Length: 220
Length: 220
Image (cartoon, rainbow over all chains, first blue to last red; front, side):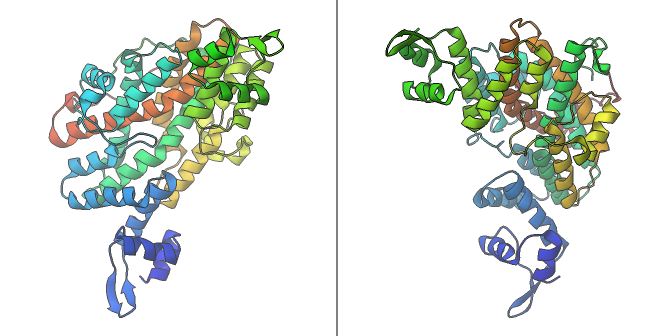
């Protein structure tokens, strides 16, 4: 397809597509004339991924390029690709860091029996959040996160199930990025809705959640 | 305590405290002289809440004031207070809206049997996220969120358990705000860590998650 159709189908303006081409976020099309090139579905998919990384989740163009380059480089190693997709630093956290730098995350990962790379930037988020809570006199340490970690484990299983059917490794990683990033606001919104429902059940006696809670524990 | 000690214990600069006093986010202290006032623990707690709302989660001072005013107004209605605490619009969403405006969230809430107010702004986040995913050719509707909703339900139960022991309604609502807001990055970080672990288990055969997954279903 021409760049104009690529623009129409992706909803990304011509000028922005050309900018991505110049910056190397989008691979060049197949030249059909001195001033024309043909683009295909891979360009369309890549454009959507760029938009998800920059537009929806606010990575800089440079950050997005790093992610995309890494994904292309490891295109034949699904696990490596997913690691890149899942390891993109959560918004508001700094650069990846060593495990020792985040002792509470390390203790949590250990207690959960998870195998997680030392460089996963989510470790930093765990320790920072706990530090913030304690700075507010809320007594909270990694043990308090264990029930949430068990639910996160089941959430991740749904996430991986969701992309299990995709065979093309790069496409699989692209979906992993999209679902990881784009679902985050929805998952937090679900928690808000469930909180209101639970509060209604406990404080007004309405709602199904008024039923006694089941015994907790690692149901796996 | 004097404003200087309030500043020391809260970590909030004198000038900022005076600004909050002028803007009405912080109730005035008890005047002890023409230019002096005494502050107490309620001021300290309120300051921490203001910092959590503005600093950590990026509400504007005006937005924070609205939340605080509403919490003070409803201080004797725990459910109302928690509704305010939980209903604060998730970052990146617009103003509260009617349920009909968000049909997918309405269908999800209905399917879950939740009692949630029509004005809960999280409804908007649900519909917007699904629209975004579909704009990226990811086939996703509210049904796909059901497994996540069931996990969110259990997460909310942990949240409410966490603050159940607090008797003072206003303090309970303050904790609800803090935990709702401040835990969000950590919960998403837990998902990232669990995703890497699950990916490791599935693609390299390492890790405890290599065990077969249990049959899913609403274990409540």
